[in-house]
Length: 447
Image (cartoon, rainbow, N blue to C red; front, side, top):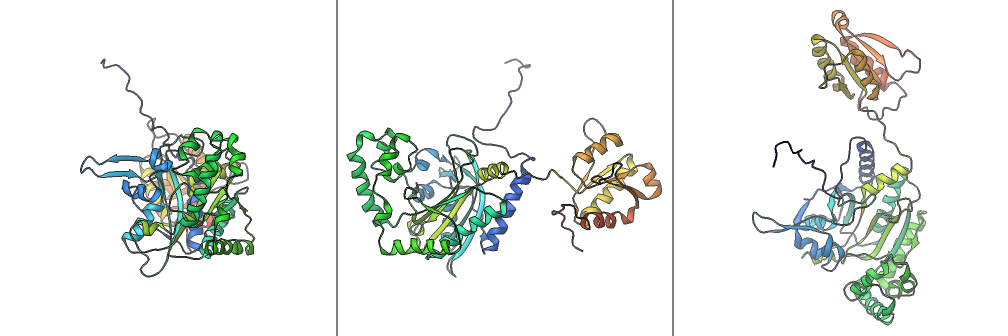
């Protein structure tokens, strides 16, 4: 191999994406809003590992689901032979932690989490192989009230994010016995119309027939619409629970439609299932999905403990925020420090630290590879940073023990400039910025 062969460029793994600084403010806006909404309902944060035992997901999600069959990133740990998997979803890990640390010994828990999940599926708009989810799990609550609370919590989040055109679909998938009776009739119905089934439906007929109801194949829609409906198989307790959820939603003016075809591909769900759907992201319309999973803790070897939760894809919600016109403020800082000469640089560091002590965000000009940069080029950088003020230090300022403070966003053409003694710079800036009506929500200065 010749030495002059160009080193091959390394790029991201297919389906994995970078979140670049330009998008960071929108992500922060989403995460901060979601976190504050969850806290306002009494939910506490839990963080679980990204890697879990493969058996955890095979047992929780079900061995014949798409996720376990063909989407999981599983591997053998070469150090000890353990079978491990990058988590494809959040609920199983949270429930494992609840059980392992006996979190519900002193009563039910409301929990929330966020972080990356991994699924090997076809990448598309707003859907990646490493994707981020925000989710909540309420463990130990049996009634319909908590189901309704989670749904209303989502509604509040959409409102706080300024998102419209997200609609709620609701269904109940009852309990295992009810599903079993429905499943037998469903298989019989599809077998009677075997000539109308596509290859995927035939493959699922005896392993996971509920998923056939979820088909996107237009040729099968009439067939699916005529299939036995699970709602017709629900008995007393399941019906009462579902009606309880609806009563609370109706009383609180939460609009929803009942979608009898709304099912879950994961084995541990029962009773209430819901999805928040939008038409603004193309075919993949679900932005948040949730439901009850009362059997799960027992499946993991714990005492029977009810649970309900939801998960939302952050990337999809960021797409939605963008399409609804949400822009992130480009401002990197409140103050940009411009300086020329060694003495000015040393003093600039001192001033920058003092200004940060007061709770303002400061960018101190540092020399790029091309050299320190003239005052003029530094002022261009100050302008581009979105800073409200530039603090300027040169030989004259050092000689006079005073900085030039220039308002970068002032309305008048020449932008007002003041000479402020070094000792008064912090107080001057705080008065100007915090006392201003400017949109400086992120200033965390306290009088």
